[in-house]
Image (cartoon, rainbow, N blue to C red; front, side):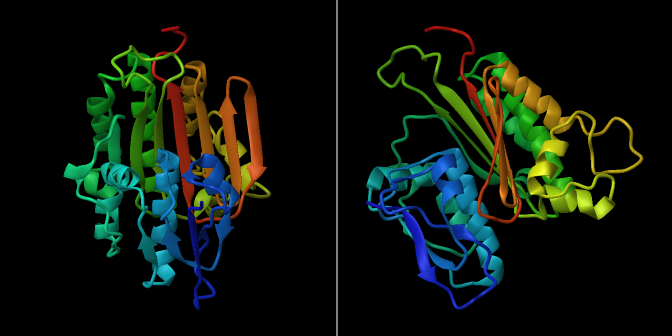
Amino acid sequence: MRAHWGGASSHENIPPVPTLPGNARTLTIGTFDSFLDPLASVCDLRDLVFIDAYGLVGTASALRAGLKESPDLRVIPPESDPTGAHLTAMGFRVFLHEHGLSANLPDLRAADVSDVVVPLRSAQVAGGDQALAHLLWEQLRDHVDPQVLEAVAEGVWETVANAIEHSGSDAQVMAQVYRSDHGGRPPHHNDRVQVVVGDIGRGVLASFQATGVHEPADELEAINIALEYLVTSIPDDPGRGQGLSTTMEQVVGLQGEMTVRSGDALVTIDRVGKKDRRVQRIPGVIVALSLPLYPGEQR
């Protein structure tokens, strides 16, 4: 079984989009970041059975970047009706329509979604960083601990503001709650909310290079610098540079995990520490926040 992008394009400069391995049936942080095909022209989701918020935002970012070079990109929908319905609930059907793509996904009325989903939205269409933060607050407040709600709302505010100011690209945002209480049981302490922001702009390294305030050697060093307190690419403006570092501290303090991907680098931070690795390059930045619904509680 496979879920992949395939089909070589005649456009040599088309940005990279993901190709998943032959036995992969999911689009998650691990699978999306590990396999890419720089010449892909078809998004083939026929065997897809699961996609998380990160995978959906990453796929949307790859499609947006690819469409800049090739208007002939095609999307083949999942053969699984429940998966297709869930993609619709995640906002993928609307996204495809807005970008002139089609995949014959089911109407939202056909969706039977057990989890809470805040569908994929454009920051520009939604009204910017504050509007998106308010939207998440309203739709998640009955499902997560108040501290977690505050952390994800502020995290979205900060990361969307960063994307708008630094990337030169519109940000896409979505969130999802993953729960095990479908049978009426109370939430388990390991159940989580995932919030993801993605853009297809210039990335963290180029943002620093544009002003010369910092001179990181590569994308990985650029991400690590950006996560430091009071570090900013904007010169002569005291007090800036608190957004990512504050978000990171809040998320880790609530037993969560923060992932930042830019260009060919990915950094993940949790209470155990920081891990980084090289990944295949895609345009822009993706920031993912993953937190337990009820930190520290055994339910």
